[in-house]
Image (cartoon, rainbow, N blue to C red; front, side, top):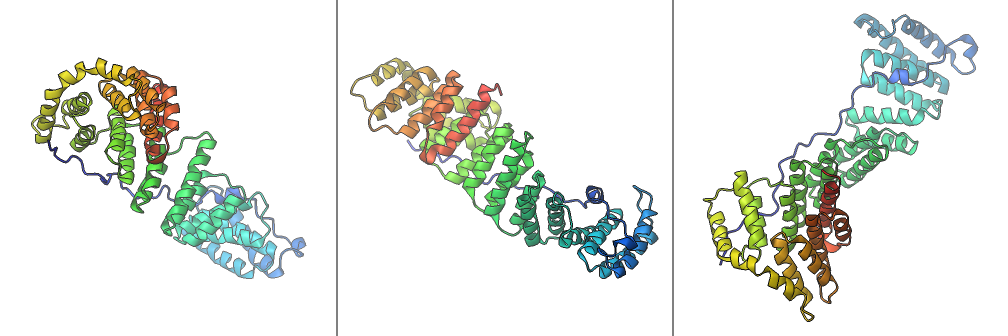
Length: 433
């Protein structure tokens, strides 16, 4: 009997909003984060040049007249900016540059002018006089201003210096990732994003779902399907919504292009999480299960699809599948006791024992199926990764979530990513989610 083709493999998922994880706002509070600019006085002559004192002294006095927390009027701001230009031009010694950098930060903050703030930060850095504990933060600010100005090379350089210096804010890593993405350094950007995720978790804070979405989308766009699937697995681990399970499973099935046996075990997880997106998912599941081999499971999937309204009972494929199921299911189900007994024969091969276990799994006889998969694993010639995957699925069915996780953890090869998603599901079930 020929079956109609079901869902096309390699579907493109819908969530493709390629927006950056963050937008850097002007650092309006930057001035308060830095040490106060040293007072300019004649007795500072050994550190400040005479020209600089002459230019910057009146500017500092003018700044002192601005009420704290208030934005100066336009005329005052214009005057401050002009005086600042003169002070910057006069700055020659390291102390000159450090002092005028602080003045620029203050004026830039008042004016909400990122260009002036950036100039001030760079003067503070270049002076070499900034306290050691402020330097990583200054490089972070310099990098954020460069990023906002789309100078991604400078942004990367400054962010890396900030990180190397011990700056702990998670946003330094996400901004580094964004600068790398903008520079078409996708692999580096994904590595930086993963570091941000790991750092966020290590600090005990929740990872924003947008971070995972960003990584999934960037990797998908770059056709880095394995990385996209790995990021999707982390998303569903932290945010196990039905939509996220759909995304995680869809991303993996797109990336791997599994043959039917592997795809069946992945789609079984879609069934468990009720994350079917549409009729094609149900039909692909039924086709991979094959109603001639697993009529009980195929019927359960079709019934679920029709009940959900995502499948129509009048659909040609649905009617054809039901026809096959109805012609086989009664006799097939009645044969399960003999199937179970057959598997215990001394000379029965591992392949046949797995087939018998599959038949029992198909009817939800999870404990017996688990027993047979264990039996098969002790026989020569067994496909251990297939048997371990299905042993884990059977153990999930019995509620043995710890045992299931242990079985899935032993899976290697092409099934590894499928097993990882099942581990996430088993952990969530164990936690009552």
